[in-house]
Structure formats: C-alpha cells, structure tokens
Length: 404
Ligand SMILES: *Cc1c(COP(=O)(O)O)cnc(C)c1O
Image (tube, rainbow, N blue to C red; front, side, top):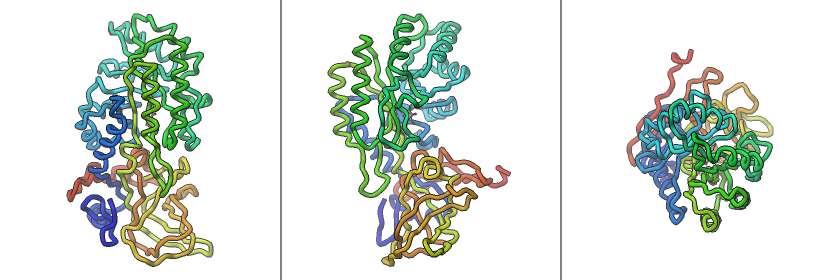
C-alpha cells in the first residue's frame, strides 16, 4: 500500500479505480496486509505458543473471518450473532471463547450446545445460570472468570476496560470468593483466568502492571489455571511517528510470568490484526472556505466511521493523488450528517484539493464497518477485498430501497 507515480495503490489496484468502479464511500481491505499482520503477530509470540482468538467484534465480515479461519486462528466472540458467524467461517468450536458482561440465557444455552472452548464469565449471576444449564443438559462446562486488575491502560478513556470503575470483570476480592465457591462445582470447570484492560495500548507498561496483578492473584489463590487469557488491546500506529506497542518487551514480560505460572496463553487481538489493513475511500462533495479554515465535506460520515465522533480517535486522511501544492490553512474534514461531532480530522495544512477529489481515511479495518449505522437514513457502504490485482465485493452496498 503506497504511492506509485503519485497515485495511491492498495496492492495492485489504485484508490481512484476502486472509487470509480464501486462508488464512494467504500471500505477496502488488503488481503496481503491481513496475512502479514497475522504472521507477524504469530512470529512475535512464537516462543510462548499462544492460542490466538481473533476478536470478531473488531471486524465480523464473513470473508475476512474465512481467511482468518484458514490461517488457523480461533475467535473471541461477544454475542450469539458473532458466534454463529465464527462457526459459519468454520472456526473450530474448541478455538472459540465467549466474552461479555451480559450474555443472555439464550446465548449461554447456544454456546454450551456448541461445545466452545470457554465461556469467560464476568459475574456470579452468570455462573449460577451456567450451572443451571449444565445441570439440565448433564454437562460440565468450561468457564473462565474475568479479573479486573484495576490497571490503567493509558489509552483513550472510553476504550479503557481494566479499571475498578469499569463494568468489566471482577475485583480481586470477588474473584477469589467465586473461585473458592465454584472450584469444586459439579457443573463448571474453572479453566481460565481472563483479563482485557482496554484497546489501543501502545506501551508495555500497562501490560506489565496487569501481569503483576494477575500473578499476585494466582499466588494468592494457589489455584492452577489451564489457560490465562490476556485479551487483546495491542495498539497500532494511527498517526505518523506515534507509538506502537513493543511486542518484544511484552513477550518477555509474559515469558517471565510463565516461569511462575505454567498455563496456556490465549490472546484476543482485533485491532492489531485488521486495523491497518482497511481504508475508507471517500469523495469530496464540497469545500467550504471560511476565513479561519476550509471545511472539506466528504461523502462519508460518522454513520460510516464513528470512531472520531465516539472516542475522539484520529485517523490520517490522505489524497488518492499527490501534488506538490501545499496550502497553509486549516482543513477540517467533515461528513454531511447533521451533528457537530460528524468530523473526522483537523489539520494545519494540506495539499491543494478540489471538489470530487478522492481521499482515503486510513487504518479503519477495525471498529470501522462493524460500528456503521443507518443514521440520517444513509445506506451502509460496501466492503471490497483486494488481493493483488483482484478487487472482490465482500459486502454489497446497502440499497436505499431496503432501508426506506
Ligand atoms: C474488544 C475486545 C478485544 C479486542 O481488543 P483489540 O483492542 O481490538 O485487540 C479482546 N478481548 C475482549 C474481551 C474485548 O472486549
């Protein structure tokens, strides 16, 4: 993915060609990038030999899950819908973990009927319900218990999950209490301790604090867990020169953790696998010049990509075609939706751009299309998978007729 003679290419297909052929806005993913992200992830943690369960909520496109499944990864799901989708992609049940604070009885029954690897529970109520289902179906269910290590992930506030005030997981006291109460249960095997402290974590230090807290609670409990599920959260480079997680350091922290605790490690990466493999290609509808800035009004909006509006996330926006004309004026890239937060990015200067030019919003492979909506009755964009010179539609553009 780079500029060739001033034109931006995703593998062998130019952004302009994609825009022309499929219309805009359009999500595009690079097949090769997904594969290399997976290989790199596996390589970084090779000496730990973890089970890697792709976080389906980050991107649940069936064709992408098919590819992930073919490469042997498992799945981390958070709803019945995601579980069904993962099974449809032929991800093996023994590689699927089910997370989430509010699984319904129906969802639990369904997951139990599919014999998945683990249900990672987050409350005593949930364990009680699982025991009831187990008793009825004469099964013993493998569960994990999610620990809230009260660790600051040092990421955006709204994607932080491992602090005491967050709804996720159980405090140390409650965790130890539940472990004691249920470790000899006839209906559940407590196989796993799970943690997930947040997303877009760019320093190994929060992980270090997390591992220390996990180590402490295990020593405290004197219990041997078959699995330690460390969740996901590995951060990627959204902005030029920004930080990215040092995998080498994180791996070494886990290695020394494993010297004290001999368990199988599970990871649940989402963003680090798919985040930088996707673009949202958009067309400039209008440019509105004001004294202080130029509003660049795109044909994509917060209904297509909500991360900037929802979390204040920053995604680079690059032109499909380079020129050497720099304009020293503030440019604010916005969508057409009637909300002030329908704003993607503000930059101090940009190259000269015109109405109908094509731009690419970068690194939108994770939490992009999955969070899209029909707000303002806008149809959802299509998704295209690029593999070398081929461009295949993997989700069709929604038809206006089907939503009105
Ligand atoms: C969202 C989520 C993940 C994935 O997080 P990334 O930051 O995309 O790697 C993993 N585990 C759980 C429990 C999650 O909720």
